[in-house]
Length: 97
Image 1: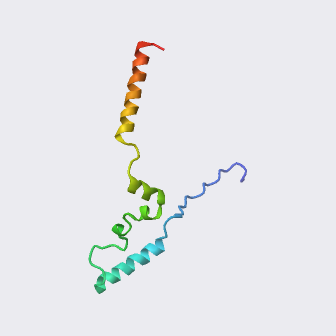
Image 2: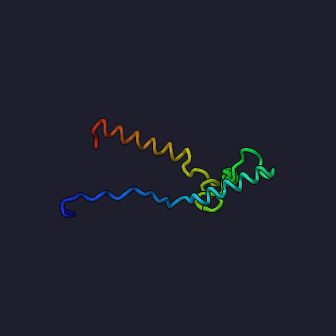
Image 3: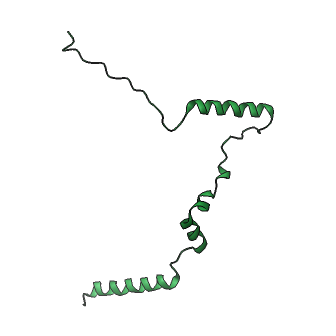
């Protein structure tokens, strides 16, 4: 009688949408063959992080401007803000309006 029997839960199957295992295996094989032929030194991977260092700034104008100009907040502005906060603190402590 199927009416009162419990169903078996569906099995978990993970589908990775961000990596391709077959491509990774193929790349490992290619790297291994290159090492055997002497084209690639031992321990060197196909992905070089130093190659990409600093490339983000080259393609974003806002980051380039910030790098060139630095911070716009100078010492005089900081001193004026601190002075204003001290005056506000004095009025809050004394209660004078």
